[in-house]
Figure 1 (tube, rainbow, N blue to C red):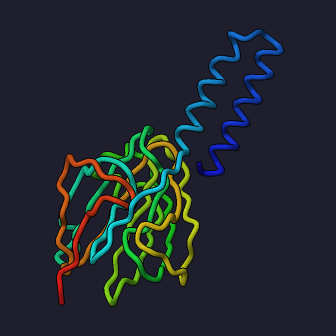
Figure 2 (figure 1 turned 60 degrees about the vertical axis):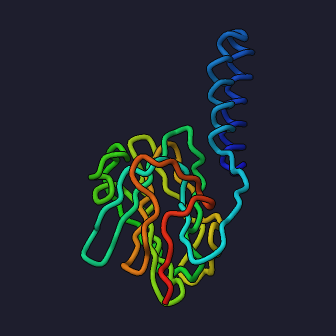
Length: 201
């Protein structure tokens, strides 16, 4: 479990204790339900990381878009609902070249406009002479994007790198040397689902 889940769980658990003491057990139930949900939301399961020249999904969720971002850049977008695991993982191994935070709006993260307009972190990874980038994008409910890495850090494929709280979106940007292996509507899991495969040579 992510440590944030412990804090939220203890906070709402404390609220339940106070409500029970002041008003009775019935009034403690909402606090207990929220505490249980927080513990569930901040779960952090282990994942089997695939080997080979592949890029994995940085997040659990549903692929909502596979499209050309520019003539030399393809984008895969994954939407996370509040029941998905929200721990983010590195799509590839390499050295982080940049972590850039952009302020923005808090549109519903499943909307196409969220990729450009919402608050987000852009993480750029130098991977074997190429670059793969991904965006941690806030949503309508998710108002905090957390990245535990900084420029210069080395990451491995599937390594935990951060978290987006309470419903959000992740975009992954690939150059022309990558063949996309997912399509809209597919469900993916962070660290274990292959999004793209790098061409030989």
